[in-house]
Image (cartoon, rainbow, N blue to C red; front, top):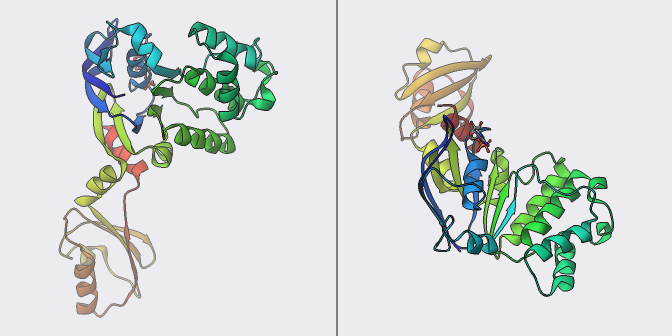
Length: 303
Ligand code: ADP
């Protein structure tokens, strides 16, 4: 079950929320859709699930156009909307029975039991949804998204507002479910995609700014850039350090500890070492500092 998004633009009144967005999610992938607030994540997900139409461009799920074959697409998609709207006065099991009815499912009883088990809701099934903790409400949201056994899951900010323990539980559940489904999840937390997703699509101000395997984005952005943290045994002048071949930035961290930066591909540690030997300085420690994915994300989305 693949998702193909081609040249999609969405304009609300005068507000352009998506600008020529193109990407593909292949069968069985878990893809993180990440971007700051207002980037267009929810809008994109609502278009894929057929809740709102795009202004222009094409979207298909497993070869079915989401506008022309909306009903067929919805059967194949499970959707957990942002803020997980639920009927708070309904009981968990009752609510799942209601959702199963909407999909005209046949084996309702066994299907609901299976969902309650998978999402860890057996003990809560006779409680009112409104009385549940946020983490359990999120499980109910996931159960309703999966009840018709869709091949594709679209999860909009599935862990937002949860405490750290609940976040881990929901992430584990998504990873487990992702083994047999195509999953697209949105978040503004980089660690989330690192923990669950094989691939990430970064969106900023309605445009895709990166789309690659998590590891590739990391490697690529560290390729033409090096940061070295070094400690010398005695005082050195910044001006003197600037003469080291390849160094473009020199920052004193503390005492004889320095941050040296280059924008070349070669390893500058040899140059630093040669400089120290030539000037009779001892290098007490030297370590390479890689940009974290969080920093890469910030760079890509602040432009
Ligand atoms: P995200 O999910 O990444 O936070 P959204 O898709 O919710 O971003 O919003 C993208 C942009 O579209 C924002 O500028 C937002 O204000 C605007 N927007 C979203 N929904 C509507 C709407 N129904 N009417 C007008 N503008 C909207």
